[in-house]
Length: 364
Image (tube, rainbow, N blue to C red; front, side, top):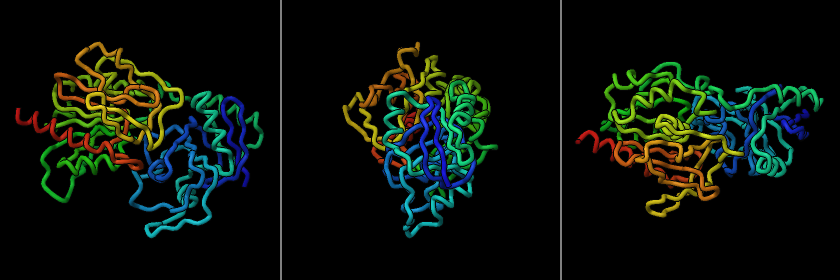
């Protein structure tokens, strides 16, 4: 069946449908990962977005139960060059096509993903639609222009857990109790927190500072998540009240939330960082980690009034802020994903840093 991808600048790409039938709207971004399409689709940070993959052949190893990073796919749609006709892997439980049909994710293949990526790099991320129903370019374009963008929009409320739950490593006794505020957490974050000896108490994004402190945790983890960080003022306010009360580690959206809670500002990047090959330098050691990233906003560290907040990491592609910490208070954050999935594991050591911070806090 024919499918159409229409961007808000009027660009139209004709291809073949796969996955579910129908129409899907979202902000179009590109991801440079060569593998991990199931982890990408199930990353809650992609809520509100349609993903195009720069790697040309997708679906060749199918999908399985172990590689999902949440309970379901969250991307609004999927754009690829070619869907593999064969899905071969000993862990395979289904094909990508069947998986997307099951969860009603609309996909399009047979389009020039290189041209799409070049357009997004030049003009920036754009609203778009994938449709198997509307071949009238103008009609679909009008729908795209009427669709919501990401600025100021609270997408966290659509992906956060509905009620608190515990995640505990069954392999050994926990050394720490950590509260994780779920703004769209990936499961490998919980696995890494378990690896460093944490019993994790997961709270919805609506949790207050009082909710957190009532659990008497040794640390607070601020998770990744979708959309504009300024769209969740209730979460920013809760974090603001918790600064200095316990060790805090934030990643991705959590990093942005911490920047806002410290009185700073965030801004939207032109086309964001999405992929598993982003070089990040630690300014203190000059060591470079290749990192997994998925974000469309960044922290303006110069806008933070507290001058004890220092820049620790930068992106070597565009020099944007990738990490910060406080000289006196027990808090630090990074813009990238140290838990990877998909991507390199260069930055897993940051979870160990969090463990060290909590140990010092407990023994102080």
